Length: 220
Image 1 (cartoon, rainbow, N blue to C red):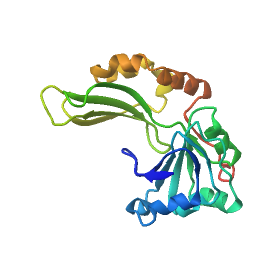
Image 2: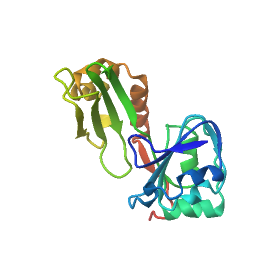
Image 3: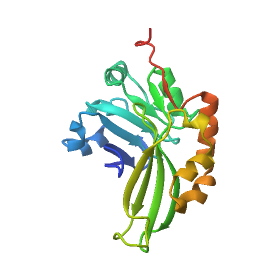
Image 4: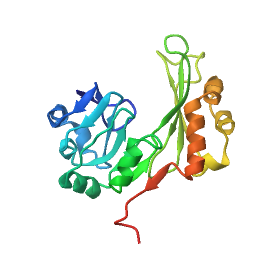
């Protein structure tokens, strides 16, 4: 199992399939990302099925674990659970998946992961536009519009990135079209036809949210 640095997050993600072992975590020993004061994100990518207990103890500042739908077993010892609790670890994953059940079982915070709303264009011609919905447990939801190309030219959307925030309750007060209308026109059709985004909006409205605090020990 390989561990690498993701393109958009401060932390690490797996590459491969099967079990993530403690031995695999030696690949990131001494990495500067481990010193991040705001916390370290770790993504169990598609293909990972389970995690050896103790693997996450090797990340002192662990703050968030994104769990893909292929994961079905993460054993949690008392030491690991204490590590999660002490760090207020956030569990990220799809609605009604193992990730959400895991967060509820161990009384942790849960949030739906980011969603790529649409991609359009060609990197080698005028550039590719990528629109992503960023969801964080602390802070408002945000749309990131990123134009990636070989060089800035008059033919692309301007190059670089543009961000804007959405209302906290956008899943209740806005439609898919409302969001698409706010984004780059190149991605409009892709956003309108994004079934994953439509499903998210529907489920978030029914659940009355996309982030949930299951921590019973701090509620009063």
